[in-house]
Image 1: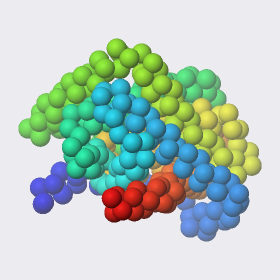
Image 2: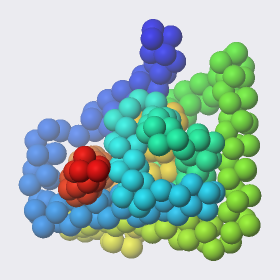
Image 3: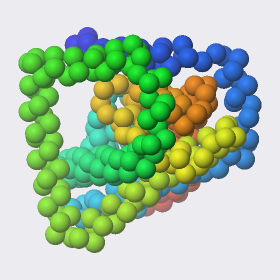
Image 4: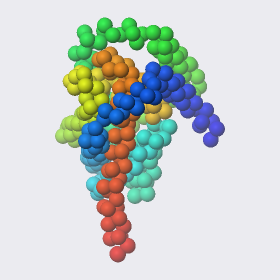
Length: 316
């Protein structure tokens, strides 16, 4: 148990350092004043979008499982995925959601390879989609962002970059680093095995890519709605173009559940557009609250289905 805690210590330190840096640029009073600008209608809209994103992601996984030969009831897939999303959101370990899926489906006699491979492919698709969206958005906004870059290229930014590069170099040279490289190669083989099934079924791959794009766009729209509500001078199009890069960075396995990276990168991204640090931090926190709230709402909506299923099983 202690060794596992030590393994996560660099991520914890990195998250706390970035959170501390983000909080050092805001004041509680300004943050509170900015929060009062958010309308209840906007927050409820974002909560609804967060719930929709959960069902889109669950439907995508259901179709992916069917494509690799695992046939479950749609409600069962939704319930398992909602629990795994909650685990992924709250756990330090980024594989918490995958382990939850494997454990729950093993109780239904579903083998772990297709569960792991589809989960891995989901991550690859999401990362690829966000990378393309980030590249496209930053390319379009490049002339507008460059004049603001010097204000963010101070000692703190250089220090963070050097720490990330130093940590990567140390990890690559260490025994644990080599172990993780071997694990990553095995993980990649599982992805390729799953990808073969999708390449045979071109329609399944196309649908998975479409639903991944739709899922990420829903989260971006949450950020756009929140930013527009909190910052009168926001350009919805510019916010839509810059947010995918922050989501891509938050998804990297360098922090605790994206904490710190998500907040600081959103502050910088919106700051390059002219928003204050208070707005950037608040938008980041509210995006997280909307997505987490969406998982909770989705779980509540699935509860009657679960109870009805249990009642039917008890009547047999």
